[in-house]
Image (cartoon, rainbow, N blue to C red; front, side, top):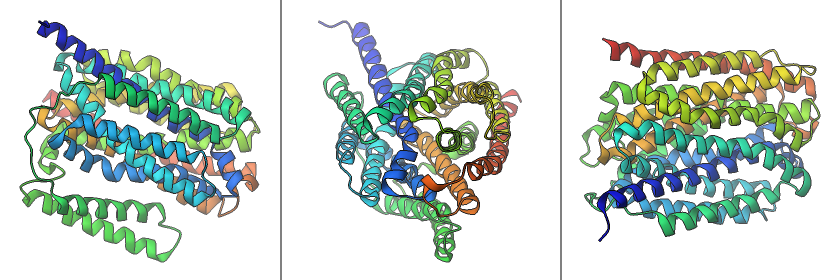
Length: 463
């Protein structure tokens, strides 16, 4: 007969391994692709604005569907949703190897985003549900470290693979990683969601959520391109208000709006949104800057850019343990302050800036993100009951991805104004440098707003 204590420890270890592998594979895919953006844009003859949709297509799909998938997973099982998400991610990645045109490539990126939404909405919930609250910070730190390890290895391996074999070979590697994650989930992941009550799926809530947030984010990302975008954005805002009112009244909401009455939950999600809106553009801009403005090859650019995620991977477990003992809001706020300082540093880059200065800014960004991410995630998950872990995990992912979409939308607006709709291969180095000098002060200011939200949690906790 199996010892219950031994069995529980085995479940805990397995969930940590699966969550870490899925986190690693998804972030590796994103960071390795970032380094290949100039090559993708050159092959398809795409403009700098069009290349930004390689990132936006994935983010929009993930942000739109993470919460609906999280709610469905809470009701019908997180394990099947996780496996289906990994499978869809694998299939779409495989077919991206052969994408003949930019529209086909972007369509497959949308499907990747759908699969990633299923993963993001379940893996953290499964992990948190298996471990006791007093260990939450530590295991979240390990899981987040896997995220940053994927981010760290992505630019280096992605840069070398792109330089030697071309950017399409990246999707061979991404597909292989997805297969490993799928096998681990199918073979080893226990079903810890057996006793969840079954409820009906509120299709109207899901439809309103997807339509309102979709119109809002698409309108925002295309705001300066045509007059229609302003109407789309306005319609999204109106529908978001309608959606919130509907969710308050309905018996089976897809988003537990009342969770936002919890101060820690709401402020932590707002802090995440502003933090990721501010720092997400760093890797995108640095990839363009190092390769097109400074003339470095993809592999060398990857080696330079590894400094940020490497620091994040090393410090995240430490930040997790620290958040179990010290004030998570204070640690997260210090992290955001580091991010803001780094963003203002990047505003002074030019075509002759020393590599030491660039790496110092990336290292400072890595320290900031590491100190922010784990304590903030621990606060979000610790603010809800176990039955809402899926929704909380999905909301955390959605806050991060909406923040990233907002950051990319702001960057796209700046790129349109500064560079214009010209092929990315033809952009002058001076234009790229000027774009960065405009962009980074704006993102630094956004990060400072996020610090205010983060600190307000600490003020409330001390009273």
